[in-house]
Image 1 (cartoon, rainbow, N blue to C red):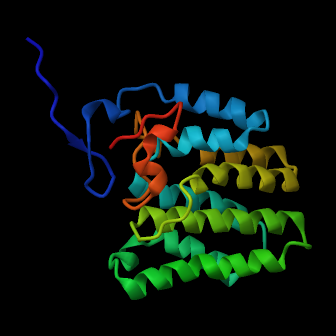
Image 2 (spheres, rainbow, N blue to C red):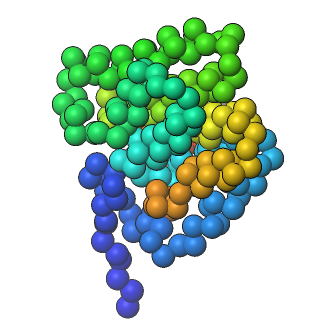
Image 3 (cartoon, helix red, strand yellow):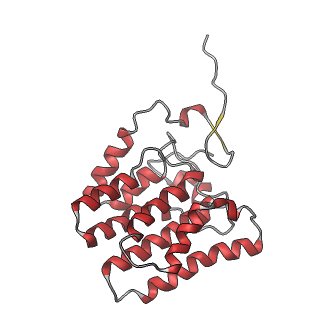
Length: 216
């Protein structure tokens, strides 16, 4: 007689997931290899979709911050970009989900967005890095559970922005390092996707995805 396996809890801020979502015993190369093929073929957003949707919500800020940090080391310090990395890597500072905290969290994105707008006619590497920082801020804001979330696909665009950075750098070793950071299997823990934010309308209308089944 087969017994139903009990619910388990992923790193999803105590959101219950069914046993089949865990990738503990799954070959992660079947996720990473198709993602690499897409990324290498110029379909970076699709590659980002494949990977991001298999990363637990609580892990997404650190995953995104590590990608941004790798690129950020290429330039001189920019406080607004540094603030995004801090935002993503220290979640304990954002545990209060109230009005003032939400506004402060949104300012992290607003500030880096202003830097992006000022850089639109400047260096290509810096432009791509700013866009990457914007999406890291969005992913972090969403993952922390603040109301009025950013677009669901911000996480998909992180791979595309990172591809822009490596294209500007044009260094094969850096490209390899960036991909290894994007596809770090330590963060790929879900067999099927989960919500990016409790208030995300895309997640609530999960049937819009033709190729992804969201936990609900």
